[in-house]
Length: 508
Ligand SMILES: Cc1ncc(COP(=O)(O)O)c(C=O)c1O
Image (cartoon, rainbow, N blue to C red; front, side, top):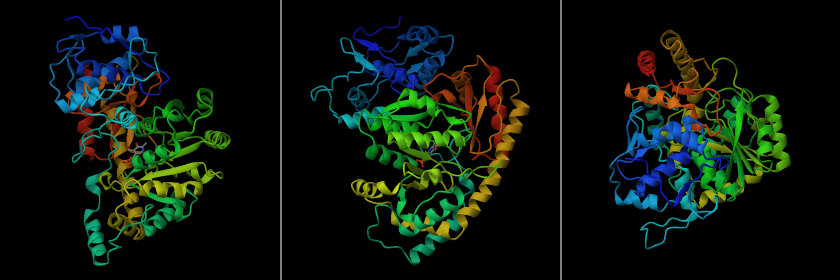
């Protein structure tokens, strides 16, 4: 069957929207399929011709197709064409998609940028607010729980190494002398805020009083609170490109206009951000260890960023998600420690230092924002769970946190070395995996001309998960790469994973 171009819709791949192009294309195709405009059996155009028509890189199209394939909307392989599957989404799914006009779908006669008409009550059983619509369009359903980490899923610490017996003792002891079982403080349990302020002063050169520390439900909650309190719809927000999708989702959901700012070996190219949008309101940066490329922001760039933020009256979120795991040199001081104008919100998480299921992190707020964040918190989840915070406070105060980090740092350094060494032995000419001074994943560079999405698909068939770097980028990059998480994997699994990856890449 020939590809069917829906007559009443134009595809708009908007390079300046900040949303990754592959996601814009994926959403458009998915909507076409769900609305029956691309019926079962329709053959999608080849990735090459669609890329040429849309004037985008072929990787953009292959990434979009791969996502559709992974979610079961289309089937088919390279060479044989991609065909829409006969899916019967249930009514809820249909209703949800019908109620969410894709930001990339523009009816004919409507100017690009104009919003699509809202679904009427008679055509849709589910009506979301404008805010809800933006939120659902911006975010992705968080992946299901990871119990057994797979080679080479990213972002997962060595959960099997967590000292659960010690934790159980601390929990039992806490129940014998519990913290208040009544309500808690919206900003968090005071002894935990004190312990975090002390830890950050020593380990990260963060300058703050305990009153500036707010306990949040993981870094994502901090990003969401910051976006809702600091951004108005239409405001510009700088994000690193490539960068963390959680920040993009939170900012987009608040109605912000994302401004992707390229990253080089010195971190975010601030001067480029100024050229793209000098009056941005908010910036997300990972200065200690850029996500996902690695590398630290240079002192020169840090100065440029703080100077610009002061002049523009912009806020900077310093996302310090994994700086505890630095192997080759001493951890770099935080950006917050060098900010004497109160423009930086420092964000940390226990997702990697303790365990992801804890859902706990911390925001260090500039003094001017402390009260507003506490009041806003009261209108949301009121306050974080008191009991969990008391156990974490005991873990920190008893010196267990620092000991656990020291042990994990040694273990992750060994695991990283094993990955680099196994890659050198088995992946020569297929994937170049250099070491990194920090973090819990590595970035492997593919030879020129090798398609990262096809590599990832081929790896999945061999039971290996690798994420194409392009998933995190909207600006074109010179070389394609794959991300490989290693912290959660014992050395024999790293070796076996590399062997399977080598077979997959050789097979392509
Ligand atoms: C850049 C970045 N920020 C924050 C987080 C952690 O988020 P959370 O604390 O919500 O689990 C991650 C996790 O992968 C990350 O990569």
